[in-house]
Length: 277
Length: 318
Image 1: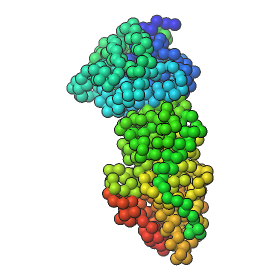
Image 2: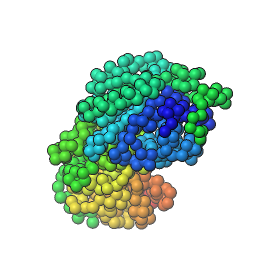
Image 3: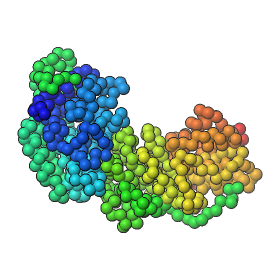
Image 4: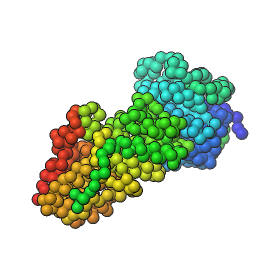
């Protein structure tokens, strides 16, 4: 298997090309989370690209902040869920790769639609409860934006997960400090997210979301904490736009596509490692 | 003749739901019941007592409950969410839309205290728009059973359907006039009387009111067809067309806004295939208010005499 960092670089390359090709989509958060997705699908989770919706005996992943679909799709394709060539159809008519993830077109790897924010943690909890009812000891992972935590449903879900001891769930917050209208501290102050999770009864860890070794070590630590009566939260500090210097740390790159010149500049920083689609 | 219909007792339809889900609990190990702090009102006590591991208390957090239900289907569970109709639909419309309907999840949204007959709690709780909201969602089945027995049978039947369902019932004690041993057929209209002068299509509690009105009309020498459209979606277009081709006029009766409910659904079929004069019984684009169920039906024009008058009017319009 190729090195994880090479996979992440190719996924970043895929993201930028996908968003450029349709001149829409969300590159910023996608680039920031490329290392997380790579770690999850190529190291941490037990999963089967043959894809079965119920996923019995497998670890499951739910993407709550569905707008970072480019990184989800690129990862699934690179992991063998569907042909990488299909990435070229992203956001185009008659594609299975909808703007936001959907089950409607039966794209392998997607288990619920997301995009309208704040719903993914509830769904992940439901799937985790189903695993308990089925005596299935595999885990459920989820990813949430920090801006997405503005949605109240997350806090309903957090309260529920602690109360019902959903200890087979590892929810990660992409704490990049950016949302559409600006930095999170300007749009809606989140305070100390980690302390809030702790106050809601979760065990929390933190990691640099753009340091592969640290990320994997933290996720393994999280795995070791499962089954002890508490849900687990990972506060992942990532940089929006990571890997493309002119996008890094800028909320403006939340949801705009690079032009031809910007694409060229971006790809110069992201060498082709696994072969382009 | 409608007057031959026997009333076997009086019970609330929500108790039919509670008894139905208890039966399901015994025979289907995948059935899971969820509630948002309304287990007692939703008559889940027997289910909780015998199947505590398959009962999930969500607290007063309906949005989270809908999401959890969607997640439970991943792994083969058949979740039944339970709360009042207002909190089952309007409060959580986007959660149902994205996590359940668009995602094609096998969630059963079971809603009590629908409509005016909720009574004294007033308009904040008397949702009159839920049928419309739910029927507009692609892939959603919408069922409004008419009495205790039918609600119990419908509850059991929807577990066999693979897909999202909205099941609407209510709070008041109401006549029981359908068979205890009925097999509920989703999407199949139930004909209570055949007639040639007027078709009366009703759903939910209002089926009994339609029968009462039909008896009065029969006593006046009219030939009345009373049809229970317990499944608003998918709609039994064949039964509707067969009836209106014969009677050449229609009255629809529902405990719901006339905008967006049963009446709209039936009229759309008629408009497309066989236009006939129509009269609508339902709330007229208004909110409800506090009062006793039967007082409210009278004030808002949903009582038996209102249906009789609508039938006589529509017959004259032929």
